Image 1 (tube, one colour):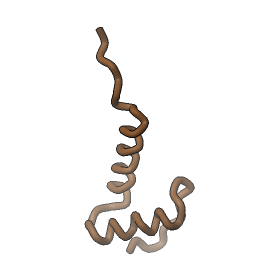
Image 2 (cartoon, rainbow, N blue to C red; image 1 turned 30 degrees about the vertical axis):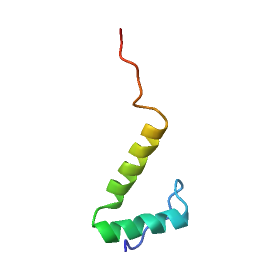
Image 3 (cartoon, rainbow, N blue to C red; image 1 turned 135 degrees about the vertical axis):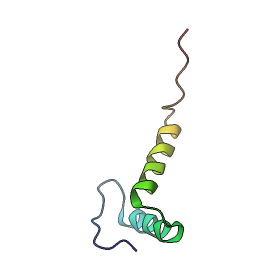
Image 4 (tube, one colour; image 1 turned 90 degrees about the vertical axis):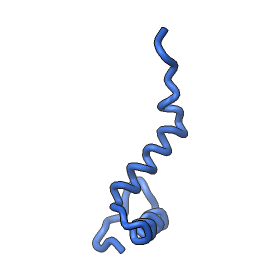
Length: 54
């Protein structure tokens, strides 16, 4: 598990613990997990649904 981390203002302690478990299981970095979460949220918000210019 990642040691000495601070609790993020954007994620609850439970969410940070879940992210750390994924990190341990998959072997990636916390930044990789957060990037994927941000990308999923942007897709969910429709950020990439821009209509082509005509």
